[in-house]
Amino acid sequence: MLVAQLRIRLFELTLLGGLLLPLTSAAAAQGSGSVGGVVTDSSGAIIYGAEVSLVGTTITVRTDDAGEFNLGNMPEGLSTIRIRRLGFLSASIPVQMSAHNGPIHLEVRLARAPTTLKPLLVQAKRVDYTGRLSGYYQRLEHQSGGTFITREQIDRENPQMLTQMLSRVAGINSTRMRAGGSGVRMRGRNCWPLVWLDGMPMGAGEVDLDAFPPSSIQGIELYLGATGAPARYTALRDMSSCGTILIWSRGPDTDPITSASRAPRDLDKLVASLSVFTADQVDKAVQLDPQHEIAVSYPPSLFAARIGGTVVAEFIVDATGKVEDGSLGIVASSNPLFSDAVRQALQGATFTPALLHGSAVRQVVQQPFEFNLNKPHPPGG
Image (cartoon, rainbow, N blue to C red):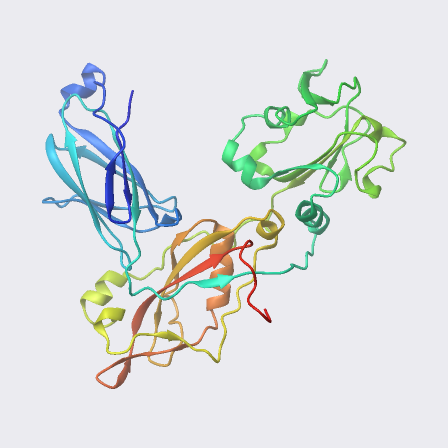
């Protein structure tokens, strides 16, 4: 079943798909369909809490933590979907629903409003790795000797079994174990590789690699021969001659601290009541305080994997220039670990407050952050 796809690139609306093939007769008889999709910003980062409504009705939903939405029970005929989010330019999309249509999928990109603050560039020349994964991160950053599979690759490919992913690496073939389960062989060898989990050997026998759920793995190191693996992982009686696999699990030290993406307050209502202002409603908008730099730490796992991204934080700056308690949320983000780093940095941030008729007032602010490993550092940086 073909799905019609629509994409908004800043101000341009492009129809990507055509009308849909008929659904089953049971679905067609209902005379209604659904419209779903995902909303991102101009960099491709997902947008949380965007309002998606069917114009002329009270049907309204908001995008979830994945930036996704779904409008069900759509009426037949031509309708207009409107997508809005504070700090972004709104978009309107026409959709044609009929009894012969299936679900329509929209991919919407919203441009940031011109009143958004200038993005802050977050870079790091180096990161001091600590904890149980420090050695893995160091080797991953420098690509020392082995083949690395990162969490991002695992999540992107979403394999059902670990051996499915491992067998895609050149020189590795999957095999069935006599007692059940699956293993691998490296570079034509008939012996099984030595497997370590979080720095501990898994024993002398062959390990059923498919017993490890891929979604529980932070990273994998593969060393195909007798040499190349770190010294401490080659000390078990020459067993590493058949190859070495180092598996590193996920845990509290690898996952985001905060799962909630949106601020708990309804900023739209506060702005409508004029108890909080936007940048275009004040005489002088909030500015970053040049005397108080916002220091954002680059997440070690993303630095090691050479991953960049973007975050847009949303919060209220009070009349003293502080971030108001309970107002901080994330509007758009390419990775939850970047979101965590921004949240932590903004806890003690100081701004120059907004002014209206000569008095300091509360203003809602959207501050973009750009995590980039490729741009050159400024002189003296």
